[in-house]
Length: 145
Image 1: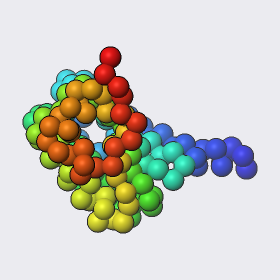
Image 2 (image 1 turned 180 degrees about the horizontal axis):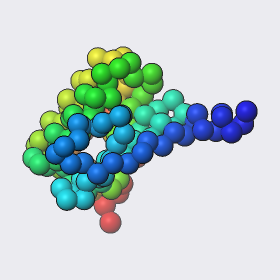
Image 3 (image 1 turned 180 degrees about the vertical axis):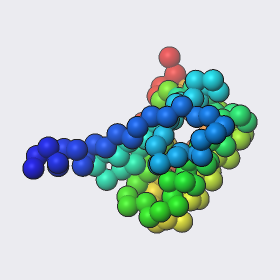
């Protein structure tokens, strides 16, 4: 029984490489896309859905995040909190910010809370410059080095 309990606490989704032939987030699996520079991985940890982003989120990659959230939230969310971990995200532009805002709207509509976790100095600066640091709940900002 303890094996079942521990597997329920930390479920890992299989990673897929995005390709034009795959539907976004097919089989609710999430992934990595090296050719575009964005990595995206989902994990359920206790009662949180954690989305780990890395690399660059820009015009060419932001729609993938938006599509994944739409696919993930097509069914009941079954969590009260969605965390987007930005620690490994090096760059974000206005389309990336728009994708985060869209995700926040979808998560709120499902009755859950969206939190941005550990943005690095560059991403924190973009959030501050746009005023979005006040639109999101932000936890654990990484201090500049």
